[in-house]
Image 1 (cartoon, rainbow, N blue to C red):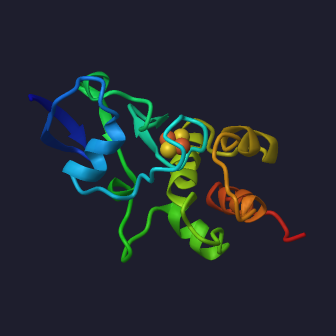
Image 2 (cartoon, rainbow, N blue to C red; image 1 turned 90 degrees about the horizontal axis):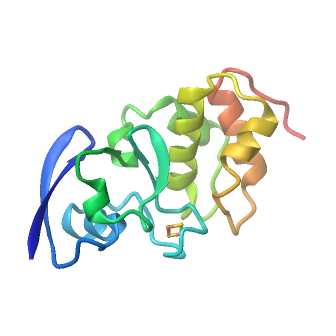
Length: 158
Ligand code: FES
């Protein structure tokens, strides 16, 4: 067992792992009890485990614990709260941009990263930024509306 110091949601956290290649996702969920990042495919293909690492979206199932040391990790728990949701979370709620909700947290994290770098994205830029976040319920239209709402450029419902 080795100990790894992680900076998660602004707090220094120490986690133990038997394997430096263990995915960050497992440690977030199982050791730190941060269940916002979801296990979907485990292969970097669905986006449900998306977190921010140094403000860029990253697939937590593909980041090793050793690679996460010294980086700033933000999970959805570090964004807002039910009482005071982040702007993007509030926009997802307003647009009801979820069905089963399993993919939603990853979508929100990708949208937050997009808006930090591109505060007024076009629809095409939003589509490109969320291209790797899959939704099996087909909520993509509502998700795009939520992103545009959060950007202050709401689109009409079709
Ligand atoms: Fe990480 Fe699917 S669980 S991308």
